[in-house]
Amino acid sequence: MERSSLDGNSLEELRKRLDEINIQLLKWLNERAAVVEQIGQLKEKQGVRRYDPVRESEMLARLIEMNEGPFDDATIQHLFKEIFKASLKLQKEDSKEALLVSRKRKSGNTHVKVGDVVLGEPHQPVMVAGPCSVETEEQVRAVAKVLVQEGVKLLRGGAFKPRTSPYDFQGLGVEGLRILRRVADEFGLAVVSEIVTPGDLEQALEYVDVIQIGARNMQNFALLKEAGKVRKPVLLKRGLAATMEEFMYAAEYILSQGNDQVMLIERGIRTYEKATRNTLDISAVPILKQETHLPVLVDISHSTGRRDIVLPIAKAALAAGADGIMVEVHPNPAVALSDANQQLNLEQFSDLMKGLREAGLIDKLSFVES
Ligand code: PEP
Ligand code: MN
Image (tube, rainbow, N blue to C red):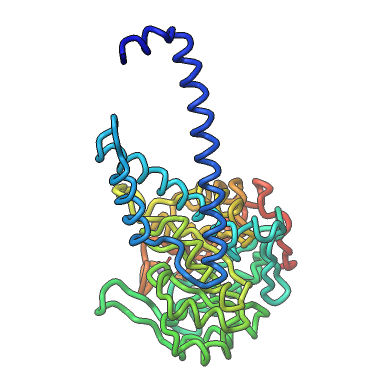
């Protein structure tokens, strides 16, 4: 019987049937995907999680019960599991589109305003420079003077230092913020400084113009949420071993609380490479620019951990489309209380600025006549 039915079909006919079945399967698969999407939308409205493992195992159990072969149960289970996964992935992509940080949600660039400086304007990169840690008022003042000469408006400096070892210099705390504010006001600069504890945020707002959230705190969700409630720009650093997706979700925490004045900063990620302190992931710049509408900066000090390559690295960052550069500058790096190996001295900083100007990369910075 079986033989004769086979005999009745030529190879050509069987292939034709197979082609038709493929098309049918394709239609059914896409129809299934459309239904899954509708379910997802309904669940979203009801505030229910989209992935439901109980429902999934019920569906698999039913399929296996109905399975009459020739595929064995394990194969059926595997095939359907793949179909379920594909549908879930589809929904995940949908939910990414819905992220507040996503360019699909907002096509234009977000401009972050810090005093009279605007970040996120194409081809108008901004420099953020200053010591790793605030040590003394004289130290910060010496750096601020050179910043002004070079047309740089944003002064960075760590007052709360998230150090790897508890025995290393932990920063001057609020006193460090006071020093930054005094010097910044004296020189007409804006203050960028890291806050590590949600409880310190409120007081810090009196002193800082930009709240920095450091790499070690990129997934400190309590801190991210608090930073989302304030009305000051936030500079969020990429975590030491964070994927770009995790980085974007961290920024989403801030935006989801109402603060859209967020800047992302690539500061190198940990790899096996030892020639640099971290590995600068330059591809993060165009990818984050494409995927999000937020300004993207590059920290050339923490990503490299060395001063001899800052100029080519800064050029690479700006050529890749970075909206700004962060660099550590100290009047006497040899005696710095933190990151002595990577901070530029004042002359090296001026050389960096000169190199970038000569390359035509920061010609839009405004300069003060000296
Ligand atoms: C810093 O910029 O002061 C700093 C500590 O950097 P990161 O958080 O990137 O290590
Ligand atoms: Mn540092």
